[in-house]
Length: 294
Image (cartoon, rainbow, N blue to C red; front, side):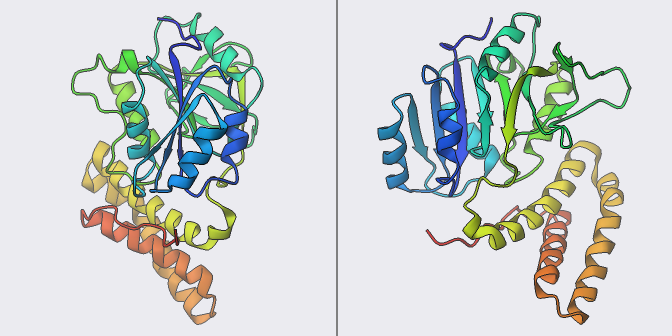
């Protein structure tokens, strides 16, 4: 089945994102259904979004459930066969969705297709290590994985996989997209980048900058938690431990260094990294949440 504007929905998970989400929504064809999943109980935000955009519904999760769980909630609230997952700090170019639709006509089947970031220094994809995947300026090309801030899921295709779940909700933040891509690859479904479909990702701007410090602490905690959990899930505990040994030692050394040099901000960052890593190694839940007032 080909993608059309009638069988495509856009899902945007937001949290304290009112400063950027309007640019994101305004860059999307107003004929396409948009579902915003707001990771809070902010009824005022919901009313504002739904009153301003006729093609947009806002679903409140009532608490901060994270990116993966938020995306799953969005998927449960649509009936279309395709879902374009976007972060609120992503802006589409004028013809991005049109290029995605056109590319789908040239591909026999896929699990995910993704637009390409216009920042070539930070590509939003990874190649397989076998060297078979090649970059192409014009035609869709296969990749190992794509970043979660812009990915179009073929829901109809993926639902045919036995016992397949979309995003692993054990992840709160980071690597839920890599996990999804790896499971899709394991089930012999292809992932493509569409080089003619371009996006601008502001990068780390999804949450209001006035919460920057707390967000930075949260990111560091969850990066290390998710890194260990991802590797343990796919490669086993011993392999995961081996992969994080350098990070573990680095965090301990830098905590001591920034303690004696009285650099509290840096020390707190590495304390969060160490905490997230240790909790993950102990099999503890990804519990940390940003301490942000409503």
